[in-house]
Image 1: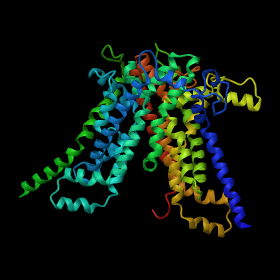
Image 2 (image 1 turned 180 degrees about the horizontal axis):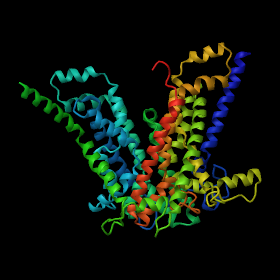
Image 3 (image 1 turned 45 degrees about the vertical axis):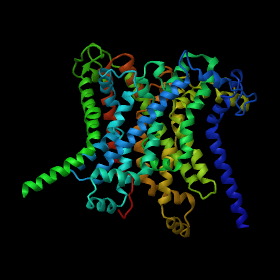
Length: 281
Length: 309
């Protein structure tokens, strides 16, 4: 009797979770379905499954606007995101190693400064940075978006890596130091290999946040051949009427694929990133 | 001897600072200097083409009270109101929802890993331009919501949610609440830390589920609730992309979705009033710092960090 009751309540609980989840994901599922529907059926059909299947929206959308297609937008987004992720992983881990392991005068002070920058709204630096990069002749290049990452400006990742490195046993690098290994040697040969899980989290979040960093792309990229995927979508939205919602939806679906793929292949690294600090989203 | 010792300390320090150099240069050149420069700009009139012209407190006066020759900037005050409303409706709702789902996700079920992943998807994708574009279509006059309300529930004369100033902000609040995944995961980690014995002991004493929630779960989670609240508040104050895309970059209809960041962008880069935008950035910094400090102060009475610590 007791077992029956728990089985029933278990099924009910599962059904409830699935129903709520589907309700929540309905807009996204509808978007995916709509991207395969012929244009005239998108806004008459609230169902997910297309009654008539077509890939026309994808063919048309991929061509983009004017002479610039989504192949260019995707290429630009990938260049910016890969370089940013790489730079964050290298330079944030270098900084994190210093804060977590090395001794130097003023360490507490600089660490406190770093933590303050973590909470700082980016707006207070936006305008002077824009003026500075404009003077460098960097407008309409990828540099204003990428270069700051070479200077470890994303304090979130420093904090994440410091937390991780502090958790590693100290005796390994202390014995390496006694054996005459240099600080840089300890960093590359001992700390980096042991920090791989946190580095993957860093790469992952850097990539995704840069992908969605619409504000900076809007500010610095001014001509369509430099546009990223989000900018391409926006261009689409502004320059087309009702007729091109199909292609618009198709390209929106494509733009979500990288995040989706990374999430499902590297799920456990996500949890670490979110659990360390819940800053974004 | 002493000299040698000093030399060694010097060397040790230099060696360590070498690792810090990229960050230090970045901090000084890309954070500290821009901050100070924007503070200076906030006291000037500056359109980027001609040199900044010192005008004292005028930018700040225009924001809040106006001057003899210039009226008060009503659009600024409106953007503050819109943002405050957005933050203080969306953040509490999001946290309540996140906690409720986290408790659901704390059950022992076979598929729980899959469920947790599915419930995180809105957060994973919600910040993108693609979802903002979708949102615009969902809540349009002839959008998905009205299609469903019309065909399934037979409702008629439904408003165009996005283009009606009465409802437009609520579509953005809904979009923010929908992305409850990060606080959910943090709550889940917190729930898993609460010792089982607490619940077992209280069951023996005859406490029901509701009683347990208020007597055990909520107090144990209070530091995490507070952490989530502050973090979500800080990031909600800076929301930009969703309002920009949903309103087509205008903050409309009738400035009803004119978020603070959006107005700052429009002032600085649309009207080239960079001094004014810099002043707005500093006011935002002060608002956020003030509210964070206030939260810490209030939380002193509400948050319990356990008796052992």
